Length: 77
Picture 1: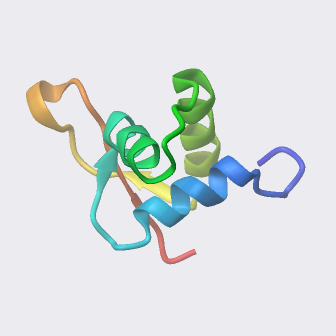
Picture 2: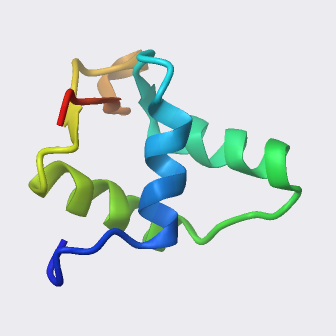
């Protein structure tokens, strides 16, 4: 994170990944919409995933279905 602080969306993504099961961005957005009833902007969501990856808080696992999706999992950090 540029300022060293996590955004509310970053905390949300980490919360969705906290169970230890890897999940790709689209599935995480769908989970968020199901839980909150509110859709989020895909660009913002994927930007936050990238920032969390750069910060070492999430890592991509393996390529997902049809090698088009990248599942992420939370790290021990």
